[in-house]
Length: 416
Image (tube, rainbow, N blue to C red; front, side, top):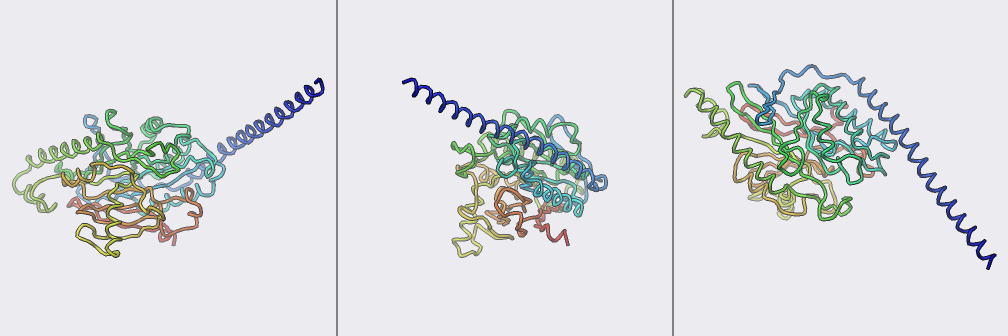
């Protein structure tokens, strides 16, 4: 009996030793990884500080603190660059890909010199197997530092990867981060605390007569849903009901503001304005910026495909293709009233999203242009750093009539 007891103790001792060695090895690996991540973070920041900034912006926005809305004033064309899915990893495993993403963003902004850059989500990618980091705040700091160095105004909406369930910081944390005064060109606003999500806000462009030429509507399309906390089942959320109500209230308020400004014009000015916008009423024209595509992206593409890849009464193909496999369009798994509300209010004629990195189509569906942005991503998809057809930016040129001209530009064309 005594021998069995001794053997049992020896076995327990061996097991504890092995377990302790494994835990120690893991802790040592994590510690080394943390040291490397800090070193690479500093290298990225040093690299960014060497980037040549654009000249000072000629059009500067002002913030109306009462309505919590940004406004640019100009009578000229206004250039917007949409970027999406930049996917800064910020860790030991993603150094090369992060440098490629930084250079891609800098190259296109330096070439285009946009008045405003709008990033439709997934600025960062705090996924450990690809990035080697869970610190989505440090990753966000790399991107924010880059945009400030480039000396352009920029706005963001959040994507599903910006705040993973296992990443260190929440959406609320990142919202506070992007709201800091240190980012003097960042136009991000948290939005109404009574409305779901972070980052439901508006950026207006007005002419010198006080008429809103165009409103850029930013909305949080959230992340995973239906218990898919890690996103492995690709179950994505939809725009929430109180966000749709916020949108409706916002459009009505913008229309009321425009009507008041219109009433102050003389008859000649009124006639000239209506002729310029091609309308009989001074209603506001607008566009929507989200990360996860609306369900109608899938509806429109399915209808187009089912008609043998030809236009239908509802669907007119403008440009681009589907590159994703499987479901092709990874939209929200539920239903929402966002698209129907846009049709009802007849203000928003353009929706811009990201999320599906290999999709870049633009379809006009029931009179509304549903557009994917060109992605930046070098990290999230296996082998995507070798692909080029999907990588670039969208240039949205706002004309005096309030309409947007959409162009998809490839990164490789900027690098020639």
